[in-house]
Image (cartoon, rainbow, N blue to C red; front, side, top):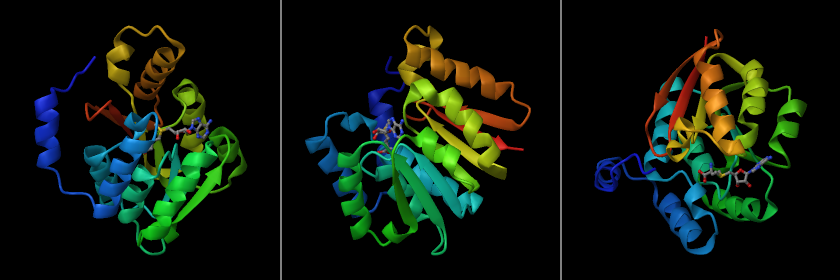
Length: 210
Ligand SMILES: C[S@@+](CC[C@H](N)C(=O)[O-])C[C@H]1O[C@@H](n2cnc3c(N)ncnc32)[C@H](O)[C@@H]1O
């Protein structure tokens, strides 16, 4: 289901602040050279992520699902100089590409890449975070959520991508549809948090820890 009219989406893009040239280049390179390029968050969500970091004053960020690094660089852009972003991915090839772009960015030195299954990374870290961006294997979304909430600081923000999953949450059938719908159900009844589901791109669930 394409739930955002294409022309409206284009209009929204046009009237959203521009991303830096390096991010434009990264998006174009990903589109031309990478299979599954549609996984990249893109201009509107990227600018939203940057704005959320700026508004919350987050200094410690965790990203689960880095891909070619577009969202990591968008998040890092609003981090202060002493702010830190830990980003996770399982795919060495995309990590190599992302790191080439991090090396060219003014904000790249704030980013640490952790290769491997993100659930393992999460279970090993003692760090806590002001903001977490969840954008990896959807079938494990509920498990991710349960591991992330204890590591999120009070008043911290969890941003979950693809929470509307092209509308498939309306009649969940495949494993991924069911997992995403289950997580949406869990969040809205979880007394530890409050949340807003935004119809941005493929759906963004904004979850604030109380
Ligand atoms: C939707 S993409 C992330 C897009 C990225 N946030 C962006 O804006 O460009 C999902 C990423 O999660 C990674 N991934 C999948 N399963 C994973 C796992 N178990 N642990 C860590 N990363 C995983 C994939 O390799 C892929 O690069």
